[in-house]
Length: 90
Image 1: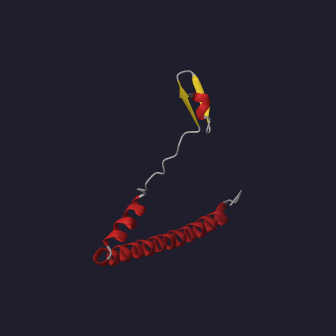
Image 2: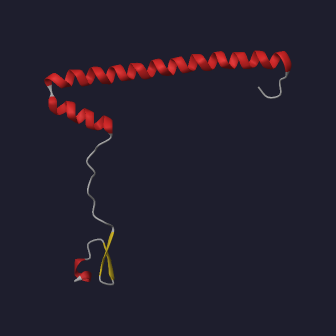
Image 3: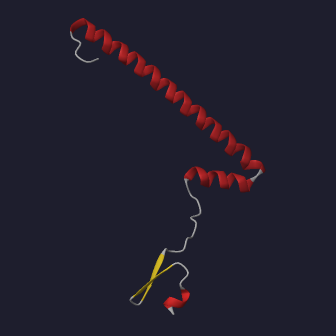
């Protein structure tokens, strides 16, 4: 759009608005389609496979089991230990 003035600017703004509406409608349609697929999957799981239903539902909500990892280093009293140095810490 840069430095366009007068009638030309009005035309450009109108064209921009028209395309913006089209993009918005496409995005809304895509979102509705995705929601429809999610709902159908949940309905199919609901009656037949409860385990997969809850697994899928938790995955949608973002509730996942966190993996437990051991820390890189530990501190006992004033000593700091890393790796598998069991003898050094004792």
